[in-house]
Each structure stands twice: as structure tokens, then as C-alpha cells.
Image (tube, rainbow, N blue to C red; front, side, top):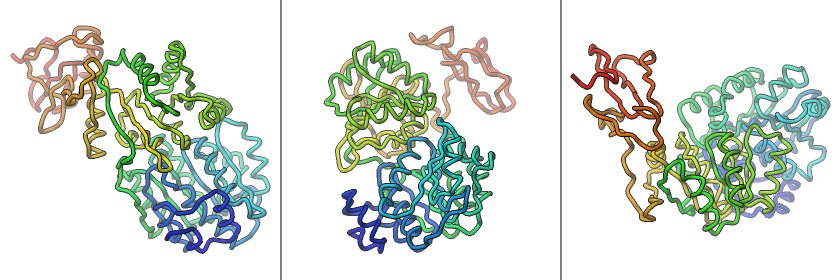
Length: 454
């Protein structure tokens, strides 16, 4: 397919697409739209920024246009589930944009962080399309403000992120309330085994669409790692933000508290920054995201979950202040740059405790990321973690007569994690005493800090 005209979409939809200046379908759109228009269930595997929203929104709008009927009160014909408020809002906006010439077309949004009464009133007369987060959807169902027995099409977007956020039980509850005869469109950036099992329960003979190999990174992103100490990260971030040629930068932290802390440190350094995460109110999140999208805010600090709703083409840099402990999250993070054909830069800070995360990321993306030592400014091979790796099992291991070395961020004779966890230990598993790890074999007496291999 070379143009949207070849999909057989209705004239009002093609007119809206032309007004959006869409000319050539992306690979996920070219493969998904014809299948969805024929009523097939689809599993779509594609990274963020590949045009997934239009891939499911356009065939759904075409279906609604060709099969016009009023939705029943307190119900909807199409249900779209997404993990975050921001992403849900953007999906609803896309439906409105692509369906602007279809009348009547009621698009409803059900998300947390805002009063539920307004959403109850919007659903009282029914909606063609409801875009919702799982938690708020169940709230509406429990209040008898919404029924799910009239749904004709279900879309599950960012399925892997919803499972990461703990929505799997909510999703199963929702699916159990839906009609068995329906069309289901299932999209995920990765396909771990839990996602495969969930898809098998939800879809009927689905067509599989994978536009890129799983967990690959964009070729237009220049990636590099800076090896540093944890305590040096704030000064290093300020240095990077001052020295890099940045249009907009998205800085990722692992926790919400960490995001707020980075904002305070940057503001003290004279660098304007704002944070977006789950503890912020919806009005705060919308205000900050709007300023970032318009270019009024240059530096945005975010957590992985909140960033799923950030769809801004002008992000020139992504900085991983904290490396993610889930390798797939690295791919999602850096995918926020190099969008719409542009080039981007991804810079990751890596301290001693994060080197195992770095190795997991490199195994996933099947490449070695160039590393620079902050102190020398020279490219370097990745140093080994504090524990020597056990070659067979991959578990940390050292000999029984090993004497631990203190590091400046350690506390106590065996480091910050010096308290033994004997009660949690099972036979045949390593006993971790901070910087010392003794491998206990079945049948042997338990070793402890006072036992030196005698």
C-alpha cells in the first residue's frame, strides 16, 4: 500500500487524513488497517511512535461510519483500554481528529485524577467510542454508570505496560464482562510469555503483525553511556544539559520521588525543569505536558509509566538518569526521540549498582553501547560489577575466604545491604551479605560472616 486511498476508507475519513497531512501509511498502518477493515482480530507488535493509534482508529471509524446506529444508554460500541491518562487523552483526541467529518460521533474519555461525575453524565446517553484506563472503567461499572455488554470492538493498547503496572487482573475482569462475539485489536511493544497467554485468551484466530524485530532500537538514535558514581549524577546531568545542543530533553528516573528530587537539584543549578508522574494531579500533568509540547519547557523529568503518554515530535535528547531495571523499558524510553524521521541522542548514566542493568539492556538490543568514563573522558570497556560473575549460573559468587573491600557509598562492615537474609534463604541458593556472597551447596552447613571457609 502506498496511499490511504487504497484502503477503501470512507470519504469523510480520507478528508480528515488529508487535513492531518498524512500521505504514506507507516508499516504498522499498512499491514493492520486492511486486516482490521475485514473484521479480523489482530495482534500488533510495534514500538512506540510507529503510528499504532491510526492503525486501529481508522478502521474502527470506517466500521462505525458504515454501520451507523445509536449506542444504548450507559454503554459504548468501541472500548479502547490504555495504561495512562495521558495516552488515553491522546487516543481520544486522535479519534476526534480522524472522525471530525462523521456526524454524529460521540467520543468519551474515562480516566482517573478527575471527577467521575462528569464522566457519568457523558456516558448517560451512550458513546460510540470510549477510551479508558482500566481502574476508572471498573469504577464506572461498579457505580452502574456503564455496561459492557454492547461492545462490538475492543482495543488493548500498550498491553505490556498495562501488565507491568499490575492491571492484568482488572483486564481479565473487564474481558469477562464483554460479549464473546466481538473484534479485538491487541497492541504491544514486546511479547513476553504473559502477554502471549493473555492474547490467547482474548483473541480468535488473530492475524499477527510485527513491523520491526522485537526490542530493536531506532538506527537514527546516537546512544552512549557515561560511567559515574551515584552521588555525581546531579552535577553530571546539569553539565550535560548545559553542554548538549538540546531542543527538548526527556530525563527518566526510576521513581516518582527521584523525579521530584532531580527537579529540585536542577532548579538550584539554574536550570528550569518540571516533573510528570502518577502523584501529580491531572491538571498539573496537563499543564506541564502542554508547556513541554509547545517548547515553553525545555527539560521534562518523567517516570516510565507517565512517559507512555508523551507523544512529542521535538524531543532531541533522552537522558536515562537512572537505568531501568527492565531492559524493555530502555527501548521505550529512547523511542521518545528520533520521531517523525528526525535524529536523536540517548545518554545513559550508569553507576556501580546499575552495571548489571546495562548488560541486560545490551543483550536485549544486541549491541554494545559506547561507554565513556566521566573522570577521564575516555571511551572504556564496561568494567565488571563488584561481584565476579559465576560463569555457569550467572549468580554472584566469591570464595569463602574472600575479604570484602569497602566502597565509599557503603555503610557497615559489609556494605549498605549488610544484614543477612538467612530466613529467606533456601538450600542451594546464594546467601548475600552485601559485598560478600557465599554459595551454599545442599547438605552443607550455612556459612555466615564469621565463617571464612574453614
